[in-house]
Image (cartoon, rainbow, N blue to C red; front, top):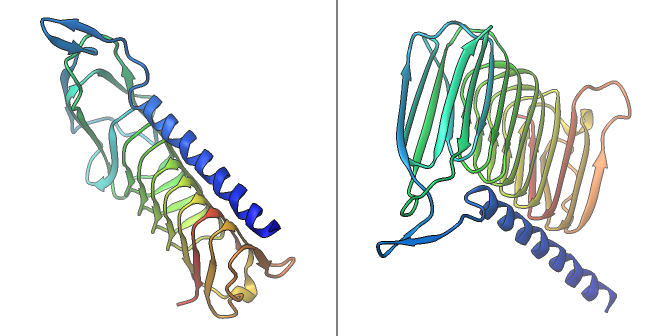
Length: 282
């Protein structure tokens, strides 16, 4: 009986988390907008098109992005460039390239429109041999793709997919309230967390911290479990680990191990609902 009640409250907790995530998604993707009836049309605001195409920017070493619904791609090329295509958007877009920092900002504009079907994309190009010291992306509801190398990386999105294929020399922190996270590039350390979404880590890293509230987690790194400090925790969902010296599969709870000292690699994986799969070795 106690086990049944334990499962019930855990399910209730998960449903509550999902409800809060969906509420947050609705808020950041539109929120509460004033409605009016004009000539038989239900009007919610106004839209406009905006296009930016700058392919000869001054060199920059830092990227700072703060967007609402803009899909972001940072790619490696042979020049410093910025291209933005916004169609039927109610949000204004501004940018600056000063003192070695490229800033891109998308803000909401309250006006009157007859519905929203916007499409906004931005592509930032940096030379493949450029040395980016840091990349920071704050997004509400859009895909974020990082394909260029940098020293440090921070990506946070409320509802959006995050893909990182570029190498990060130092710390990489990626967070999504509702969206899948994939990190295939090598990192000095990686911290990835999502409330609702699949997390996949395949790039080598000196330290890994992965957490998913609702969703599967898959981790593949070189090495062996014997030389890895790790903590795997799940409330509802199984833990599956494979590789040399992998711990046995468990259905609930947590498992941890590894040497107490002498190793730099830390693997920590947590999920409230969803399977966890980890693999170390070739």
